[in-house]
Length: 367
Image (tube, rainbow, N blue to C red):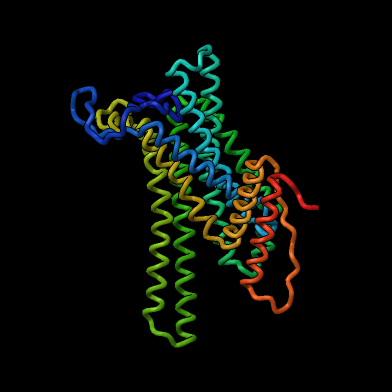
């Protein structure tokens, strides 16, 4: 399923570049001219996908566990984590299928393999579209919360957010199915490129508008409290730096992939473009990196979500420890604390009780 020269598949093959040791070198194109090619080892690709998978699963679990996080904003963040999870999971699945086919461990008919690849491509494409849509939805939600703060809870209600989420998922699945079906049409790739540029412009306009309003608010506070102007200037610089990082990461991680699609349409046989096509796996790796960065930007900055995440991890560790002990849990009797008893004496009594209980053998429970 590679995208080399004429467009043969929308998402391409994950083994389009050599999978030997990682290298950054000059490869020869059809005329022998050197072109820069970066080889991503399969182990690194799968490791990044696994990190993204675990990270986004934790975000989804934390939001699902805490009812205080069942708000429209966190619903969008949860769906972003779920779509990022599907992006990394589908790419890992396709990589595993390719490796199994190359190693001869998976032997099946060509029609079955083609159908499997089509299904994975639909899943990957729809999850990518969902990820982009939810990034835009989060920007719109934050814009409404700032510019319509008093009416936010009447505008962005939970049922309305759920309808938006359902519409995004349905539209992404239907459009990705059409894209995969008509992958050999240039209009399909151009639609994806235009969609990416539209999301980039939307996010840039909204976040720049929010930054301008925040700077005005900070300037008003400065005048009210008669503070020095450098404080406002420092706030503006920090806000501009945050905005640059947010949009820069989005563009650097997603831009090369859509540039690849654009070049497939406009210069499929050009020598320079053929050199860029050799690095398609690098572009997919950048998207996987974006799925790792998204929770750090949108989810883990919330103190409530971090606290819930600690609870989820604690429960998971306790459950794992109990399973590793085979269910044999030793219950220690609670000793009443007498008034005036020193801390050192309490610790000594607890140690004595522990030693006596352990002498009775593991797995015994005190009545």
